[in-house]
Image (cartoon, rainbow, N blue to C red; front, side, top):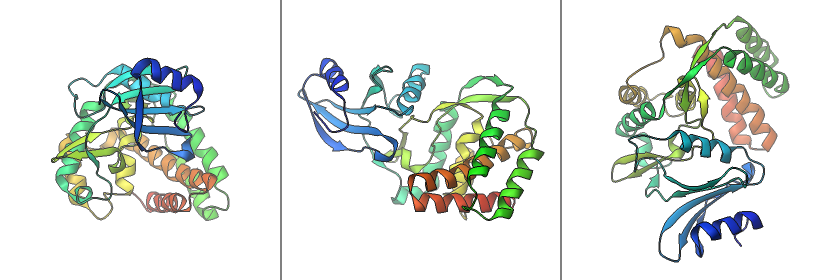
Length: 279
């Protein structure tokens, strides 16, 4: 039995796929998620994701249940799933990760990624309490960041939160972690993987990581992405955009510290600094 799979999960996989072998282990130990590229006895390749505690499996199953109309070959296809067993199987999507390759610095990558995101986003209703709940979570993270960022930053973050008033927000079916580590390339075609953080949120949620990473000092990549997406952050979205940035910035600091990932924590500190300097 592959490491990371429970007896129940292994039995389900056997009933779904028959005999199989592991081609590559892509697991995320820090998130209690087993990710395996497997091959069946008939030569078919699949990706298996399993967990005991992570809510990411449920989110990914839900995202696939909503459907990805017109995106066959650009996102994985779900073939088996059990929310109860925290287990899912998708068809293997060929390609190599964009992160760390020359494609990560190519405008065409971002034009395609922007266009794909626009097709992934679908209206998911209006929420009157999303912004309030996110502000509460953000303030909690600010409180827990004591000693992790300068004290005057925490004071300014709290003041920013108090000043924001996004009101009701339009939700969309967001990816949740939209960046090159979740993009594949194959012969110049960009694909999207890993919907474990997918949820109904404001569409701008999916822009935050890119803004603080790949778009820093690369306006050409930002312009290409927004050209593909076909829209940009404008006045009606400014407060919720600011709130999403505040939340993801300080939460990155706290989460990175909590799991002992110093590099991730430092990236969060940089995010906070950029937000407070007027991003």
